[in-house]
Structures are given as C-alpha cells and as structure tokens.
Length: 191
Image 1 (cartoon, rainbow, N blue to C red):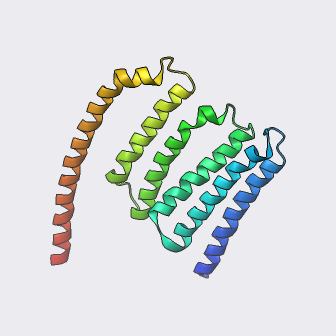
Image 2: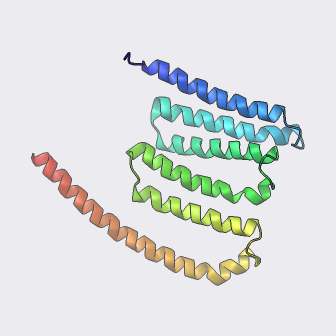
Image 3: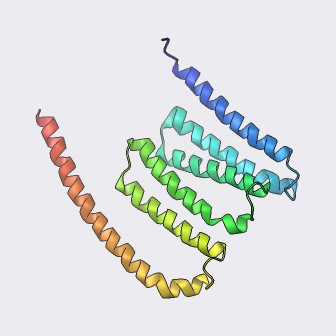
C-alpha cells in the first residue's frame, strides 16, 4: 500500500475543516429562524476562529494550549450556531453554562492529545469545570429554585472543604506517582 505524504494529510485536514465551516455557513444562510444578520454570524466567527486554532496544533505546532482553545471555540461556535438558528430549543442565556462543560471536556482532550493518556493534572480541573458547569445549568434552567447567591452562601463552605480535601488527596497521589515514575526512569537508564 502506498504511504500518503504529510502534505496530502495536511490538505485533507484543511479541506475537511473548510467543509465543516461551509456546512455551518449554509445552515445559517438558509435558516429563517434567527433574528438578525449579526445574531446569525457571530457564532460562525467563533467557529472559524476555533477551526483555525484547531488546525495549527494538529498540522504544525502540536501546542496543547492552541488545541484546547481551538476545541473550545469550535464546539462553542457550532453549538451557538445551532441555538441561534433554533435547531436546539431555548436561548443562549439558558445554555451558557454548557460552555464551561465544553471547556472541561476540551481540557481532558488536550491532555490526551499531548500525552496520549489521561493525566490527573488535566483530569481534576476538567472534572471540576464539568461539575461547575452542570451546577450552573441547574440554575440556568431554574431546576433549582433558590437563588445562586443563597445556594453559594449555604453550600459554598461545604464545597470549599470538599475541594480542599480533594486537593490534599491529589497532592499525595501525585507525590506517590512521581516517586514510582522516578524509580522506573532510574531502572530504565541503568539497563
């Protein structure tokens, strides 16, 4: 089987990303649901920026930060386009906490992209972002009827203590993992 060149794969990646943008542009152009021109196209600007930020780390730089930013912007732009065009019900004023959830998922993906496995240093903040976004969603859709201020005053100290205990556990886990990792590295260098 003939091996494809790197340039061919870069062109294939660029073309597929362009077609994704074109599909969302066609969706916006043929939609009758959005309220104005500006409301239709701001999500496409975010999506385009995300695709650009996503293309360069995949094809050129391998930057984790650019990959994370590109993934968050791409997913947020695509989701916002669907919401603005009323394909997904409700408004962005209710859906905004989902961007925090997208950020957590993108953080896990960025860690896996760089290290080819899930790392605790990426996963713990990501899980916290996902949990925080889910809590905000409960308030945004008025599933929890009390105000966020009252909820934070009542349960904030409990979450602070739980978060602190988890950070101490994380510290000890990382310390133990580093010791095991350092011993394995020493064994490999001796061989």
